[in-house]
Length: 282
Ligand SMILES: O=C(O)C(=O)C[C@H](O)C(=O)CO
Ligand SMILES: [Zn+2]
Image 1 (tube, rainbow, N blue to C red):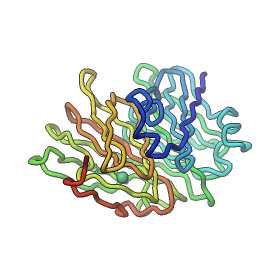
Image 2 (cartoon, rainbow, N blue to C red):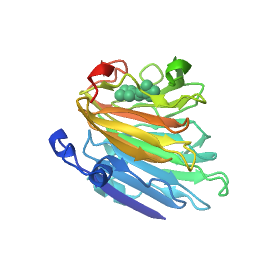
Image 3 (spheres, rainbow, N blue to C red):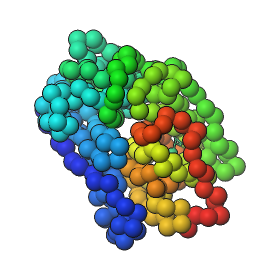
């Protein structure tokens, strides 16, 4: 198996505002997370969130010593917690001998102290795609599966403003306790293309998005940056975007799509957002 690791440094907005499109992509996107037989990870310096994609084929993939070494610990979750959502075929995660069946759109939380983690696809012809986030932790909370029906469903937006969508809160204090991690999935209704508008900021928490279910000839224009100096990223299916605390994070697609959002930082209050009046965006 191959484990590839990249780093994303924390960037000040004055630097980001001087970047070319290619530099914005290098700093704020993780373009390749999923490939059969690979575990691809990006170690970000935004609240030290580790973002990874594991796509096991016929053989299992394991969290190995490369990732332990990356975080300077005996094993990856020695001082961390981990959340994942499967956006591929049915899969299994074996954690310290316990097998979790993780179907399409199921989530899994693994608490601090979990030593051995292995990922498998039930059928190599329809491989699982585990989208993984791990952040530093200070306490051990129980590991558990979070199915789509366990998640809290929110109906947002309106067809008239092209933003009708369902937002599912998977890793959220009302579903299960975690140290820092918040994670969920938002799906746009057919014909709706805008996410997260009006845009918002939350200086207290960083955020990451992975967009998926974008048709091959379609894309999402993801808006980032300070509200008064926005920039954009063209995002294809299964590519992730990092949102520093100073950045808005919203977008519009040339078709409907889904995305997973995740956050870490000073609080776990999903509603703690500073909305930006639409008229102020530049
Ligand atoms: O559709 C939305 O709105 C979102 O998914 C918003 C994100 O969850 C978010 O930015 C939370 O801070
Ligand atoms: Zn947000």
